[in-house]
Image (cartoon, rainbow, N blue to C red; front, side, top):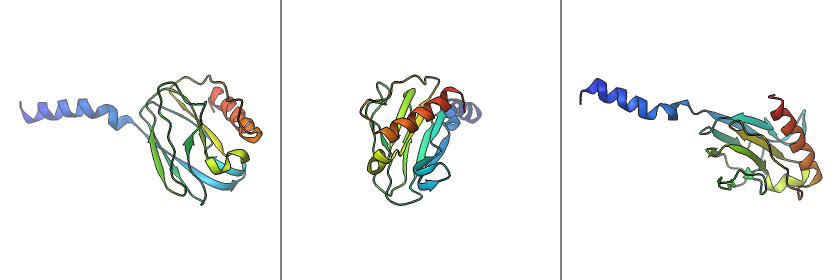
Length: 143
């Protein structure tokens, strides 16, 4: 096989991987939006994209929220105060929590692909439920 043909074949095989994006989310104690927040607090990404969670302030982590995870997606949990990357391959709606600050409402939503319909878990603390409801409205409105 000639070198130009081999290069063309290799670029065609790896093209989808080069289209994936990395999105950064900061974990913060306070912003104009309030205390204990992810910034941004919601994302709409494509399957195959990666989210990099950055503990800009100490005491935070990022973990999937039980009951708000697409079927077939694997749960994940980062260590406290450590940057963490997760690649989202299964389309659907993911709830993300900071485990130490869930009761304070430190949650976010990540919509992978076009599916945004989901029911929030009934067991959520009230502040988390309020924030997730607001974030869901923003995603549904395309904001």
